[in-house]
Length: 147
Figure 1 (cartoon, one colour):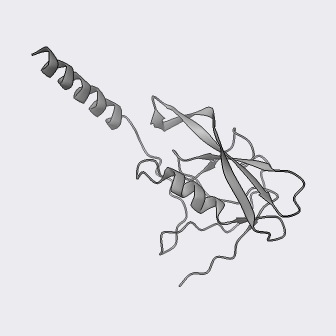
Figure 2 (figure 1 turned 45 degrees about the vertical axis):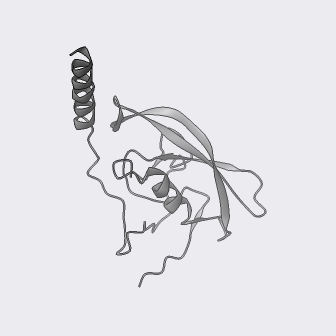
Figure 3 (figure 1 turned 45 degrees about the horizontal axis):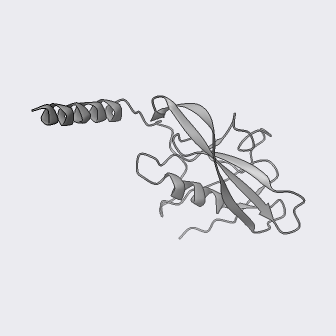
């Protein structure tokens, strides 16, 4: 009997936690192939380069958060069109998010570089919330071809 009550309690907790999550209604720009579309470089010098203004790629609800992060990064170039390379340096920086656990989410920090760059740049990405996608200041955008 105690075991059944314990299991019932766990089910009730997981239902109440999952039903309190809300996904932002602002969608990323996507094309017909469900690929991200980036059309401009941000004018705000903190966009993506500060944990206070992360890139918002969303995708956690659909279990696509890390994939969305890579889809976004794969559209960036160095300032003169150079191919970039990147790696995930880890999670950091708790932020408020209705889509995170108990109102909080962690950002992912990616370290980005390109040939002849003088330094490695940190880009902060939020995979819990969705927002308009732009390239951070100092980056370019790959030419995007659509069928």
